[in-house]
Image (cartoon, rainbow, N blue to C red; front, side, top):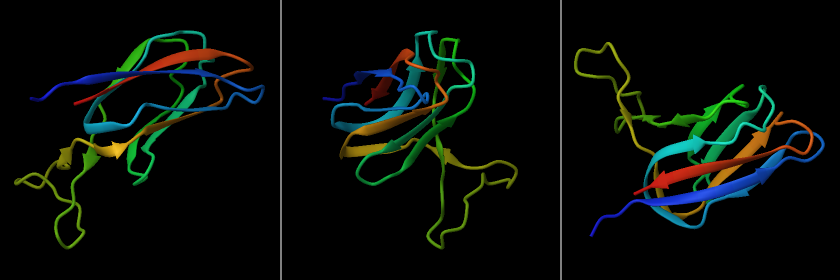
Length: 124
């Protein structure tokens, strides 16, 4: 049976505006990452990766102060490691990022001095 799991990650920044947090161990496609608090500074930056395989999931800049949701996708490559494009060659071919028994790591920068925010990562 397929199901979708939502992981809440609450982060509180250090004096330099940085924070790091993790979801629980996840399996499946990363459907979305949502930020629902507005306490972080407007210049907040987020980098999300899978913990074990270090796959890039999302890089977002200057999002603080506004609720937002991202639906991350990554560039698909062919067997020769070339970037795959759509059949007409005009657009990148994108697909979901997959987590395989690993946590999603969220790294926050420039979030402000001792500010907090909650992120929801949806995997299924």
